[in-house]
Length: 172
Image 1 (cartoon, rainbow, N blue to C red):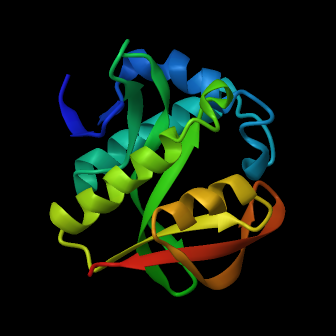
Image 2: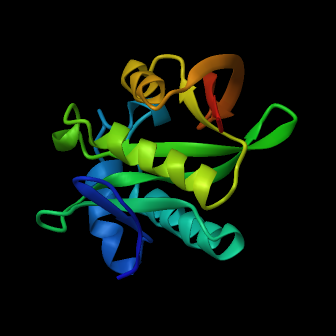
């Protein structure tokens, strides 16, 4: 198991086939997946997983599995992806955690680690988080990660028009 990065309480690593049950725990929970218009089917979880593997191969990064150091339990996903934004592509920090682990600072801790990885390892000049306008908890993680809301855009996903905000932080 190759750790991509470590924080005080967490480590992030590439996903593998054995992680699909953990992904299902997260992505098949209705409340967790509210920003995505509901829980994913087994096929959608599999497609999500395969998209991360393709990202690792193409870019060397993607969403990584977030595990607790104390017991190696997978509690979420956090990482870097290239996302479309209006007429360009941007480097985004994304995060999605199992509901039982919300409100413990794990998403913020992992997101800060990914911000530092983007700046130090990838030499990125800026990184963002693209967040649905109704997702207050994710907006708060972005703010704690030093980001500020800069622009909005309506994305079309799963048959729904969803207003999103792009929160941005630049390398100092």
